[in-house]
Amino acid sequence: MNLLSFGIREGKISAMISPLVSFVFMMLLVVIIGYGGMQVSSGVLTAGELVAFILYLIQIIMPLTQLTTFFTQIQKAKGASERIIETLAAEEEVYEGQEEANGTEGPISVEGLSFGYKSGEKVLNDVSFQMLPGQVTAIVGPSGGGKTTLFSLLERFYEPQSGLIKLGDKPVSTFSLRSWRKLIGYVSQESPLLAGTIAENLTYGLDRDVSREEMHAAAAMAYADGFIDALPEGYNTDVGERGVKLSGGQRQRIAIARALLRNPKILMLDEATSSLDSQSEAVVQKALSNLMKGRTTIVIAHRLATVVNAEQIIFMEKGQITGMGSHEELLENHELYREFATQQLQINNPEVQDIKEEAPVLHDKNTSSGRRSAHPRIGRSISES
Image (tube, rainbow, N blue to C red; front, side, top):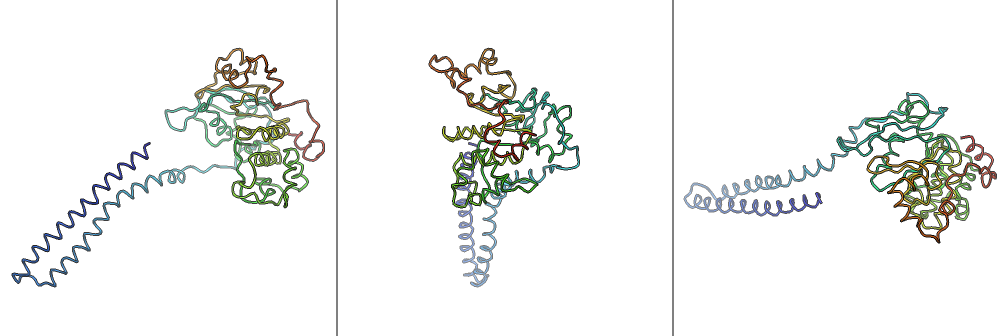
């Protein structure tokens, strides 16, 4: 709306200034020609001098008329470059030179975390919780509650204004960015791929050589091997800009395979299945189950059916935690969660079976076989994490 109102104001001012400047110029020209003609007839000026004077006047007036648009254009340029200047002035992240996060064990603790993108406007306000190793923590709640901002702080894209994030008993701010982010695997709602081959996208960001056997194993665990092998060029197939040559479900499975190759200790899932159709979602959900085994997992979800089996569910509203516990505990004690569950899961409908049985299994601590056993190398590295 602000951009529209400024555009209308600019149009109105331009519509007034342009004819006004043209009118003043024409009046000056008429006066000079009239007065100059009188001077020529009385012999004070020659006709050549009058014409030269008029040409000089035109050469001076035309640049002056262009000044009327100059100030408008410079204001536009300042507005367009403001964000660029702000980005160039931002302090560069320091990846090296601090303590290494590798080898540090223990739960992830968030203590009194507060953050706002603008001063005086807090997106997160005194958020505290703990994620135990190997367990699934789900963050649910209305849009705009601060869930994605919390993810950004966990990945250290921003520094909190107050509070701490700890791994074990050490603040993550003491770790080098490179070593901290090596521990994290991230699967977003939309997983755009880079222009290049499937193999290049699978190994993107890795600082080690990946064998074709390891790549095959990761693709198999992500249920991506079927469609990749069916492609004419297999892993050398070009995916196009942002992966436009693949479907949404195929892109998600490649993103999961890429996360498997990273072998992260901490897994972050941001609505990883919300934009898929039911058939693709079922396959991706199986792949996520393979990816989540033995890892500390934090999930953002609007669909409660995908997180009811999580060991811990955190309900966030307006940047604050208003409920924490299992599905059954929140269903009993949290009014808004109960409302969400009633709408989404139809828990009051006697024809619907127990939702715990219907929900996809996000995390199975007792499962150690299946597709993983066919690929001992990657299966071993994943179980070790």
